Length: 209
Image (tube, rainbow, N blue to C red; front, side, top):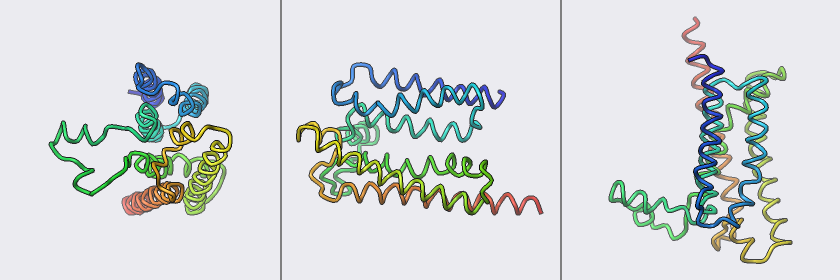
């Protein structure tokens, strides 16, 4: 399959996942706000794919993160039934095994933000003429900066929303350090991706020798 066709297949998967996961959602009114960035980003991605599509691997990473967010948004992050899924499939409960008292799916999404979007960001800076090493550093810094801005945006929303609506959107679940932990998970995901990128570069250069 040509690379541009595969990239567009991932784009189709993006919109199919969106259509499937918003259907009969358990929290439709609260979910709507979660999907404002989903729709805006999806429209940008659609326009981009017809002009200059991303390579299939990068498009796959972007789609994987988007699907992760869509799953979380369906259950407004705080109520994703991953524990029930694990118990149903494996007979094992992560909540019990690790002694968790809150739903941690939001942490996974923030980690995925750093891990899955590092490469697209790195490639974007590479196209602007940055060095490979500078591109990695800027990609990680972008992840840190946007994570901070998102947490500030969540805080700003609480000034205009009712306490219940703010809690449903932010998914703080009573944790006063939720914002800091979310940013830390995104930073960690970016660091893991940075390490993988260095390993891939080292392996590629070794094969070229």
